[in-house]
Length: 130
Image (cartoon, rainbow, N blue to C red):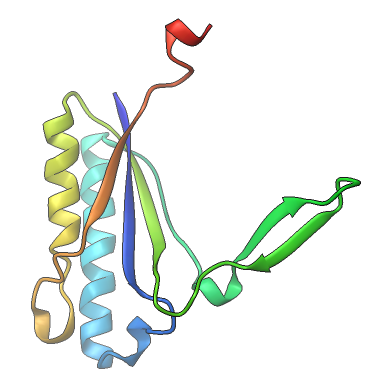
């Protein structure tokens, strides 16, 4: 079963680059290592980090279908920083992976323990909706 692991992180307006350079490098190395391990195990389908909210827009269709854009996040809201799509045998394995990612090192090497949302990817609508 496929799962998406959604990594929400610091509040908009805050940024990892304010960390000491060595802490930032350790954090990135940790994430790269997890990705390598998940690729090697065959569990990683896709992963990607996302840009900061100041580069994001909320888009909706106007009356004639023309895109209307607005800024996405107020400064006090956490934002989606990245995601992993994994293909694992059990939900518990998806939770184990999410917990490991959650413990990524932050300033001074202390685990960040940030929350990840884990959602199954069913591959289509539920049969009762067809």
